[in-house]
Every structure is written in structure tokens, then in C-alpha cells.
Length: 122
Length: 107
Image (cartoon, rainbow over all chains, first blue to last red):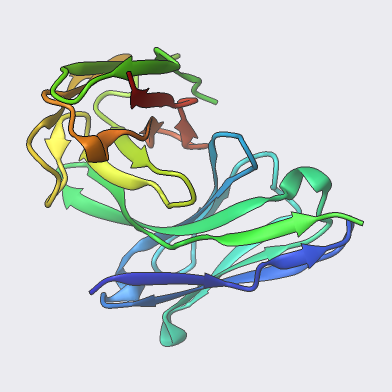
């Protein structure tokens, strides 16, 4: 059974740092692009970043570029999101998700974690 | 960034109703669109990928159509478990972007 489990969330002061982890199981982690999303309270979903299977390519949304870093450890079946210079507006539930390739150029985000709460407040 | 809009923002319906939700992209995204269902406190659940392909395990009352800039999610006969928020997501180009969502609630 495919499972994604986020951890590392919590309360942090503005300007602080936090590292989220996403533990993957039930599939060959090293063969999938992996993604981070977030949802601020009462707001819509936002895609944040993704990383290629071997970690050689990474993409970010502008709002987190330069502050957040996505990484992975295929030996540990784990995805990470290092978040620095945190702001109140980064308060959200953070989700990791797998990007599945069906072939013929079709993709989806087929499995998601349960989410990790990050609260940025003094 | 590609902007995604959805309509309506909310709708009230009854069990058994046919429900249609639309999603529009600000530029051509071919078929690179997915539909997701989200319930309170839960992660999104994939329903439809590549605009019209039903994800395995999703009931056949859900269907998707469209390509380019205009897309539709249809629920042929609304069931009690379908009351939720529905979101579209384009993954044609970075940054991937969601529509604002359509809340389907009980009439």
C-alpha cells in the first residue's frame, strides 16, 4: 500500500526555520517526481516545489523561491522541505504528493500525505 | 503563471442530481488538467487526470471533459459522500496552479 507520511511541522517564530519530512512506503520512491503543496487556513491549495527522481532538477513557485529548498534521500525513501526565513503567511498545512506518469504525456498527483501543520507566529 | 478559474464557486444540490463544474485556464494547457475532491481536514483525492481519464477506484459517476482552456467535471448522480470541494489543477507548465474550488453542499 502506498503511503506518504509528513512530519516536522510545528510552531515557529517569524524569521525562523523548519524542516519537513515525508516518509514514503509501498512503492519505488526513487522512480517518481515528488512534490510539496500547502493550504493556508481558509484558502486554496498552492503547489510549492517538485524534484526529479535523482534530485537533478527542482522547480519552485516564486513565493518560496530562495527561502525553501526541496531535497530527497532515495536510500531513505524520504522527501524534505527546508523552510527558512518563515513568515506569517507561510502558516498552512503542508502536503507531499507523488507525481505519477501514466504514459503518453499524462501525469497526475495520485497519492498525498495526510498533511503537516506549520504555524508561523510570535 | 497560468490562472485557473472555476464556476460556480458553490452550489447546492440534492442526492441524485446531475452536477456540472467548469474550470477555465488563462492559456492553452492541452489536456494537462486534473480534478480533485477535498473534504474538510483531508488531503485532496484525485478523481480525473489528463482532463478526462478516470482514476482507478473512482466511481464512474464522475467524468471529465474538455481540452485547451475549457474543462468540465460532471457528477452524473450526486451521492451523499460527494458533498465536498472540487478543485482543478493544471500541470502543463510551472508553477502548477489550482482553481479556487467549487463547494458542493446539500440543498
